[in-house]
Length: 133
Image 1 (spheres, rainbow, N blue to C red):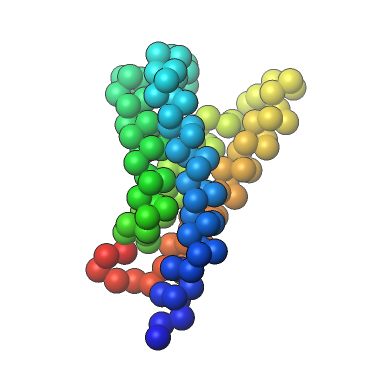
Image 2: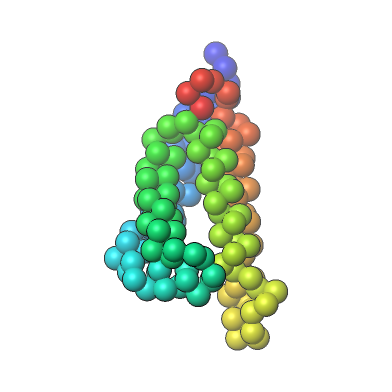
């Protein structure tokens, strides 16, 4: 028996994926219900076609965690989510240019995203390579 395969499919591993995925799923649902405000925020960050970007982000943040929890193509999906999470940190949590009032919050959110990126990369690293992953 491959111990990596059995490890990634344990109840504890599933619970970990639920905890990681919940953050993104909830964020995606919140963006969906505040679509105009989210698109306005993305526009303020300099994104072209902010409504399209908003729709794509909502899709990734709702569908991605569901597939992640289910373990669908876990290695590839974890890498996609890691890249997305790192880009989010770099684009939306620019603590280095934040004013004094926002600095701590942006710094915390930046490193929260970097840590979550690490969690996704860890899942990718321990997921055995198969045609399905």
